[in-house]
Image 1: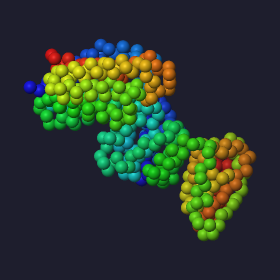
Image 2 (image 1 turned 120 degrees about the vertical axis):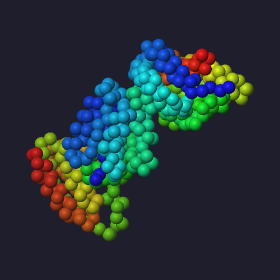
Image 3 (image 1 turned 180 degrees about the vertical axis):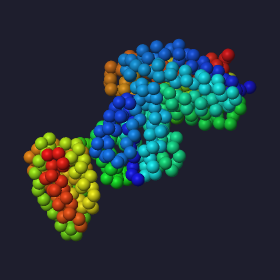
Image 4 (image 1 turned 180 degrees about the horizontal axis):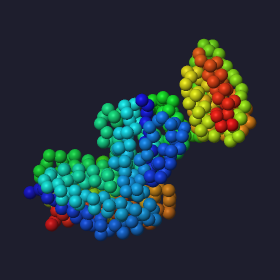
Length: 210
Length: 229
């Protein structure tokens, strides 16, 4: 029994909640190595998503992900807007027309989102960006799927890998964005984009568990 | 119709200010600001960029100039949403936003196509360095003779931005390859990089069928003080 559009809806609602709860922390992570607005920007984006989602009475998972994409692109304002927006848009494309999402669909969503973000931001693994959370998450999800795990277990594996990936950005030197201006002074700081990715993917797992 | 420009900045004031500067030198070119978020806060707006592209591109294409990283990301995202036909003629220039916009605006004002406008904008990446001389490679030797003229700059403030733009616009009306003190007379940034002050001696060369007319016109323009001496 796979997940439905109800899971996508719950994921988005939970994402808005955890981003709001963690916006101060995300902004605090962004202050020393960025421009100190990641939490506020992400919160503005997800706050705008919620009423739009409420007015979308019916819709597939792909419709919901596309709505998130367009809203984030329009409202976030910082680099996270086009990056996450492109990610959600590609994720929507990966499951277009599917009423039920099985393990393969979830792996496809994560991989497409990651590929979209790479396409937009051109970051590689190890450059202290959100890709350092996304790529381990995609790998862990694919591994869990190959091992015959459930949808919930696949999402939990992805969330745990993203959290570990976010922590692992701390010793890295940034190669992208404003953090790259700091050189070695970025060492010791966690990348805020990797941290917001970990929060969003944990929300995806929690939405499946509910 | 000509190529339009979009100035994408995190700040509405920066975008509007650059547009104001560019319009002074390119009064008839469509230069659209797309700065800040919809509520005026700092950031880049997908909607503002999309609307500005729609106004800037009347069919001849548009060139975008961006400030910091996420302005480029948002502009690229906006380009992704254009239809295939329009996407083929809307280009993001890799150039510093102020100098690039000014150079691009003058190129658009003189009828340059998208490629020419992008080249003009990106020439701002290497200011002060003499370009490979177009006059040397334009025509095979012997097919036309190079004419030379001299003039003295009378403007008390030297060849600053506005008269320099006037000069480039006038030079661009001629088919001849023209240089001034060794740099391409049709490149605003090259000319400004010469740092010509009041009293500077200018040496102009021209090569091509309308070379003599071009030199007459440009010497006349310089000696008239560009209407401000």
